[in-house]
Length: 382
Ligand code: B12
Ligand SMILES: Nc1nc2c(ncn2[C@@H]2O[C@H](COP(=O)(O)OP(=O)(O)OP(=O)(O)O)[C@@H](O)[C@H]2O)c(=O)[nH]1
Ligand SMILES: [Mg+2]
Image (cartoon, helix red, strand yellow):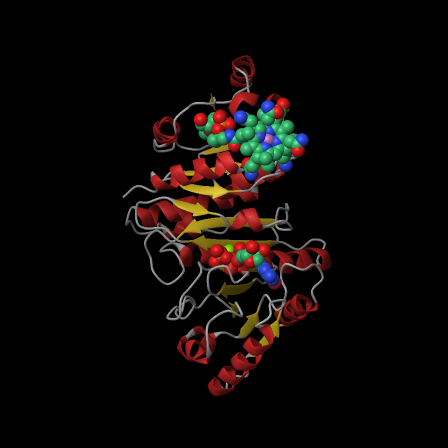
């Protein structure tokens, strides 16, 4: 089966009109497209970096607050400068983009602008027709990010087609002179949907970037999808500190695999772990009681289970397998009322497994949270 079409969508800087793009994202997903959503108020640099790392076919921009002629043109210019001419640009903005503006934008390289009154069906048909054809052979990558991104796509597509990896080309070391001297630590984050995994990772990334002025980090983030169907890859929209040139982030859909990871995760992780990063962080989809995403995956050095204080009662805790397996357990959202009880109950539960696991309380959405500092110290020590 061919890989789904991957596109990136975003709303420009100083623009908070995200209702149109949210509706359009859902329609794309319903029609089998994987949408990496970057969120609103995003700069040209953030959009282009994300599009290259995610190796999408096209960028869909929804713009309402004016400046669209310049903004779209800058995105195209930066893509070209970075050697990513194969990533196309399209978009809309209701009545704020006139037909005359659209003609100018097309002359500057925009593929298409959709006006007010266009049906959602018309847009999805366009995306499937325009960006659904297999890629032509690509020219040599211009940056390490781009090279890595192309290889990750190759791995994902190989898995989707049910073929075996040509280990030499897909998994060969990327062009990174520092990779030989760095040792990479791989940390796996898992836990129920909405527990705050992405927010927590983003805060840890901030601490890492501040502490290591030359350090580099990779994030492999998962969201659920069925085989051959679309997916909303939304973790990037929550990331603020990770929109940084020293952070390589890739979003993956699980493409029908249960347990929190994708069929291609292991190979993608193997590649990232040898590509010169100080840390590779992997985030699973929101998982249930039975999930053991990292059990058989020998590449992960340390596992962190992020819990929400609202898990139910002690009985539910007994059923969560990862509580026996995780190296570190985090009770995030400690600002919530039930957090104290949750800490006590989880502490008692961990005592049973006698594995000397660490239990840390965090408030990931708060800046400079001492719990996150403690978690960062623990992770960077080992
Ligand atoms: C809803 C809305 C809001 C909501 C936004 C909610 C949200 N979270 O998105 C609220 C009330 C918060 C809001 C606030 C503001 N708004 Co307002 N808002 C609108 C409104 C009424 C509708 C926009 C919309 O969502 N339409 C629904 C979409 C689905 O339909 P559409 O726009 O026709 O788009 C079609 C296509 O273009 C296509 N499309 C759109 N985007 C994309 C992207 C891709 C990839 C594709 C393929 C297609 C596509 O999809 C549609 C299909 O038919 C417009 C007026 C209008 N009628 O357009 C003003 C409007 C955009 N807002 C405006 C303004 C000025 C503001 C404020 C600055 C007001 C203020 N002074 O505070 C703030 C700014 C907020 C911010 N942070 O940016 C102005 C912009 C003027 C300009 N650019 O010159 C407008 C045009 C109103 C006006 N006439 O003055 N706004
Ligand atoms: N009250 C509170 N809310 C938080 C905290 N950390 C994160 N959140 C909020 O919880 C919601 C989910 O956060 P995410 O970081 O997206 O959670 P996630 O575990 O990555 O979610 P999935 O990837 O969908 O499983 C967001 O609205 C965050 O702002 C916290 O410490 N306290
Ligand atoms: Mg997440």
